[in-house]
Image (cartoon, rainbow, N blue to C red; front, side):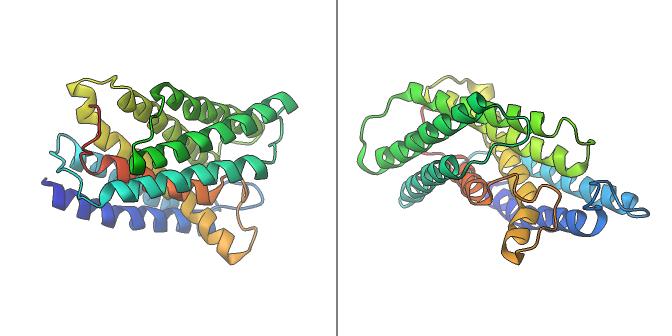
Length: 259
């Protein structure tokens, strides 16, 4: 598949995955318990199976694809999204409410690394626009922040039955972690030909998983209804901007990429 067709396929797959997950969350899950409603489990599994297939096919579409050089205006889009992501992380730090089971020390660490992650991405955005020097080693900070989020989410939901909502949320946060790991490696020049070939499909999968997960939360947020079991578990603005940022740094071959 050529690059143009791969982009079109991704553009079609993303809204379909988001829509199907919204249908699963709002119509096939019992919000009081988190389990599938009686008689709807087969339909839910079918829709989630379609989501999985579309995500896998999207990754295949971008595997070993020759990405064109980014357009002249693209670095500005990436820079603006980077700054926006940094601002979202900063806002997330100040709005953070510890989940059940989160100790005060862990909560403090999350706030600290959220602030530091925000500074990292704002700094990167400024660097893209004005070439202000940036320490490549600081990209380890968002990795630590995502690890802390995985730990706190797992602790909070350890006492809850394994339901599709919890599983998807953990998948989404793990996708954020995987991207930050891959992004840090790229920015520090730690890569090889095989790794570079997996970069685009890996980023596409991460973006799709995050978008698919947050779609019901976004609908729930604008509808102003507590229709989901964990309605406030993910910060939708941060996740939306992060998904767009992932696409912006992976879909084209950036002239400034080290790999």
